[in-house]
Length: 99
Image (cartoon, rainbow, N blue to C red; front, side, top):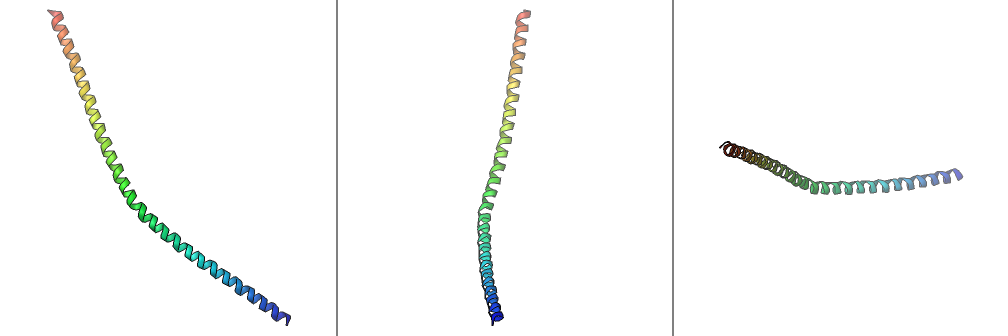
C-alpha cells in the first residue's frame, strides 16, 4: 500500500504543478495581449504626432532659409549704400578740394 500512496501523492503533486503552470501560461497570454493592444494604441497615437512634427520642422527650415536670404539681401544692400556713400563723399571732397 505504501508504494501506491507514494504514487498517488506524486500524481497529485504533478497535477497541482500542471494546474499552476496552466494558470501562469494563461496569465502570460493575457498580459501579452494587453501589452500588444497598448503598443498598438500608442503607435497609432504617436504616428500622426510625428507626421505633424515633421511638417512643422520642414516649415521652420523653410522659414529659416527665407530669413537667411532676406538677411543676406539686407547686408548686401547696406554694403551697397555704405559704398555709395563713401564714393559720393570722396567725389564731393575731390570736386570741392580741387576748385
